[in-house]
Image (cartoon, rainbow, N blue to C red; front, side, top):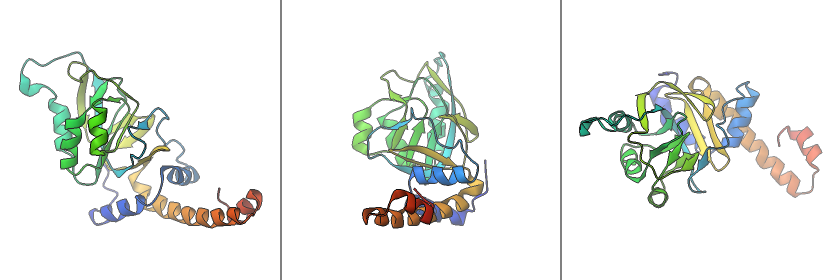
Length: 224
């Protein structure tokens, strides 16, 4: 677990990140040499308006055909992961080719203060989750339950999701363009530079609308 972001800064950074977009954040990460921070294109928002910004609560899931005999042992680690969520977090689940999520879990996660979920895997209960407007980013939709197919091994560690290494406490921003992960130790720098880039893009947008050529705009302002 990373402790690079002080508790007093957590809310402020989220507010600032919420004013940005995954693409501009990706541009800054590229600029700083972190070129593998955008999750694979297969991860898509469950509904077009879905947008998520928060701190990663990582979950490592693996395939498993086991169904515990005792009812209280079923979904045990998955439920524990949900109950570990705190305000401002986004659950980020490792690569798994099964359904992991649904409407009732979305309600439970929201009640814990979660801002959304990113799964390199599937969800179900699409209508219910969409009606809730719970930001959900997944690779697909599948009706089959997780029981006897998925086992949560641990949460709060380092995982691989969408081809990106994600640690608990990293920052996540997801929108229609995709999901970008910011390593916690460079979050302040990335957000500040992204804010500067957005300001530059606003200027270039006006200049292009006034008729400036795109080449001149790029050479003069250095952004596209």
